[in-house]
Amino acid sequence: MGYDIKGYSFGFMTHRGDLKKPCTKESLQALRETGTEWIALCVDQRQETKNSQEIRLNYNLNVTDIELIEFIDYAHELGMKVCLKPMMECNDRTWRAEIDFWKDRGSWAKWFYEYGGYITRMAELAEYTGCDMFCLGCEMLGTERQEKHWRELIAEVRELYHGPLTYNTNHGKEMVAQWYDAIDYIGTSAYYPVAKEGGASVEEMKVVWEQVRDNLKAVNEKWNKPIIFMEIGCRSARGCATMPWDFMHYELPYDEDEQANFFESCLQVFEDVDWMKGFFWWDWRHELPKDKHPGFSIYDKKASEVLKKYYTK
Image 1: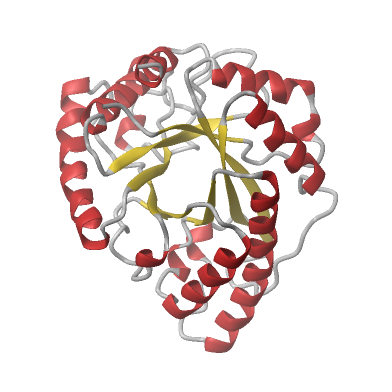
Image 2: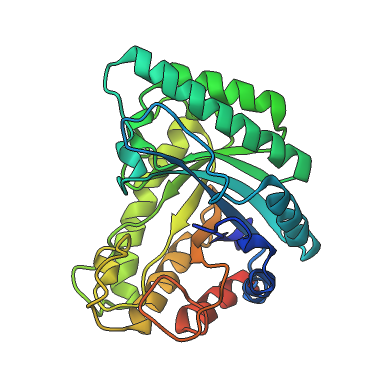
């Protein structure tokens, strides 16, 4: 049956001017050659700390609206579809999931006012450029219990952007938010640990993916909404299938097989699941790597051939 969304995350942590560079177009072309038909175009925005109530554009850092418009147009010219994905980051390097004000209603109102201003601006840009999907937020676990604020924001976005909406929660937290009836796709960062130690086989990983599949089926049945893995990936380092989210342990030995097995096992298990609509693998940078390294990149690695096998079916 295959997948409706054969996607990859693109452009994370790009800065002003990066989307205009020739190397960025070259990188997107190389991604297209893997059979990838969609990109989640990641656009970061900043607040100072997890408790900051102000969100401000950095004119020297953030990519400009013109850059985004031109790059989205270019992706469409290549025959690719685009999910515009704004992502909050904290300048003190706190994970966005920790943005929280507990029971402080005033702070929540202020923060959602700021975040809403940013998200509605991005939604207008998504509408103007004909983006094929819009993501309302990424891994913002501390905010997810604020049902009233999220429903109000979704209603505002619906007035501005008329395509499908998704939200990107984190693995294991898919049952927390109680407002998924208001969106079109339930997204999650599927960094599930699928191995107990380095060197696990495809078959060993598949056993865990089958458990994940069965758990997510309950999420689909509760909301009657299709599911997307808005982020998913594994570094090419031995042991990373035990902690696919890891981006720090670069002392681990290089291992293309572990990464390739992670891709193969997941793509096999979910291929014929009707409520699983696809993937945005993590992540494809705007500059192609000049050499192989134990990061998330699959360029010129075994996992690239695995992906191409499924994405070109």
